[in-house]
Image (cartoon, rainbow, N blue to C red; front, top):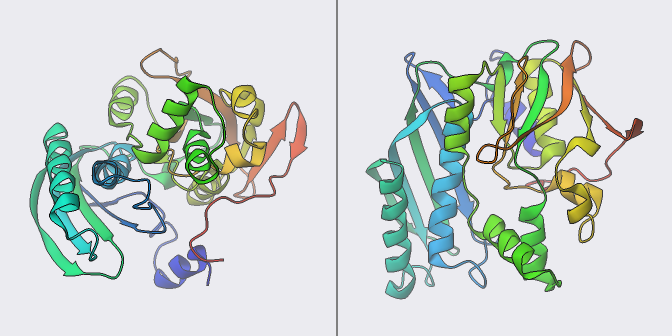
Length: 303
């Protein structure tokens, strides 16, 4: 079964927006999210160091809390360690970096589990706090579609590691960092929610093609995205196809809706890439005014 079909089956009979948000909001105050990163699916020991993996585990979870307008508070950690990752030379730097990242975000680690696994399998459950959540299903007609930063660098970093493609040094460093140690946009989310009214928001983890579709479906809106408004297209198309850029996952950029004109700054770069209207909950891409149908969907756990 496809991932979307599995999720639909899990939430059969529940309200339409069940399971569609980055976090579950409960008790009028708390957000909860959980993410697993697994060897061979989300990282490879051949090129991801223990430090890289600890960073990614924390950041992908903090990203969900950030995209829901909250602050991370408490974590629970499940460590599935293999014969490779149970060794001190792997485990000690992993745990040191994990504690450093938890300290950076002022997160308290309060429990979890450890077990043996044929491959390294790591799960973090994170509880956050917010006075007012920003979820995927609360967008409305005539919202503008925004994204933070740029997309494509994570996939470029992967191709650099897998295919040893040649890149300028500065771009090489940027792409590797984006792939190996992606960063949540917590400060960006705090800035946006303080200054603007954000209707709906999520993070880009499965690529813009998939994730914009999820946002459109959750908010029951048609979304029209103008591809040429996405930053750095010309620069990255020297190394990636357009569909590669649009489907690049684990970017951890914010994708959000707002009726306000949001100003991009050096510290908080954002781009308006489209508009949401009433209609079939689907995304329509255009490129220079012409309809564009991506042939890729991005990363799929199950085909």
